[in-house]
Length: 248
Image 1 (cartoon, helix red, strand yellow):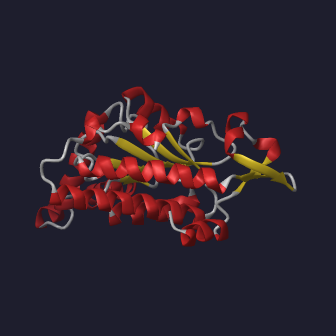
Image 2 (cartoon, rainbow, N blue to C red; image 1 turned 90 degrees about the vertical axis):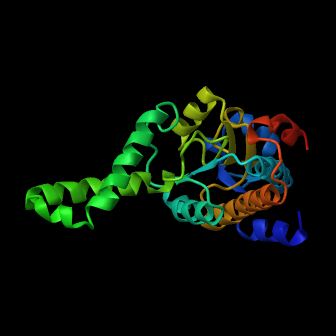
Image 3 (tube, rainbow, N blue to C red; image 1 turned 120 degrees about the vertical axis):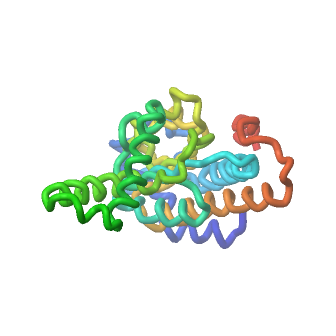
């Protein structure tokens, strides 16, 4: 990890945690100090978390598996969408729909409905509907597009989920844990690191902090995809050992 990136992370305020009164004691190993009632995150731990996550995601992408990006808070949504699109992975940036993973078949059927509306609304057939029905269909399309557009490429369950703020996205984390899907998360001092497989301790409220971390993770996936293209016989992502990555 270059010294330039370390400096960028510090300038982005990745080391600023929450007020000490809001901390989760399980985050103690990742905290460097307390200044003016604010916990200061140990940047060395942030770097270690990034290295582990990058290594794991590169292996997952090289195996041809999917990585689902999740971040619905205002500070994260735009960056989640941009970086997920950059590495050609599905994402959730608006609202986590209950059962997205645990009731995956239903979500796929809703995506099928979205595709039907995509084709219907611009077609001549649409003009045959009454104005009331047209309005209802357009309203349905807008709602579904807002909530599901990022998951159009989620044609199977992901191998891994990248999360910004696991405390806010606790429902997504619960579903992933239930199905044994590996979780990588940018996690602040108010969250429980035991709920995440590969935690990256850092400020999850700063737009710049989120941008830097997601850029690094997206770059790792792009690298993994490039490796897959150059080595078609690479092992499947299901065989990736997250514990090995954690020990790196």
